[in-house]
Image 1 (cartoon, rainbow, N blue to C red):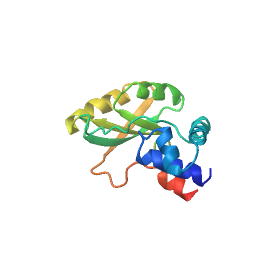
Image 2: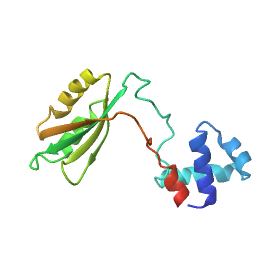
Image 3: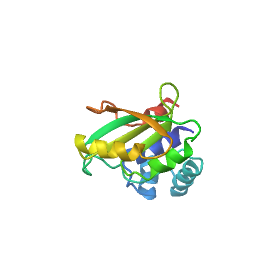
Image 4: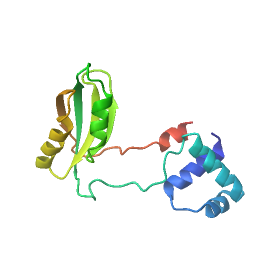
Length: 151
């Protein structure tokens, strides 16, 4: 990762719809260089997607909650993870250490609808208990660019 990679990633983070030709013009490098760098960043896993960022709130899901699940150790995490992946309101799930075994970020249409989402989450063999914390406001959105700038 060099300065050109960092500048290229920052450009696409700020303006995801900029074309390769325009990026090459702005950065003062050949179009082929930009394309080769982008291809390498994708193939190495640094750049993981080009899709639009979506707002759950704008899609009708203004409530965010975090669920900590306790999983039956004999059942394992895989069957629970497959179940969670089938629930559209589950935005992400991570195996964790400490109290609980699995952490999920979920969204719902309302506080009352959150109960429906929780009921779907726990409706699988292996989930023994769930505790829920509701988000009141987002203070720092998900971000990765500061890591890029720190490298």
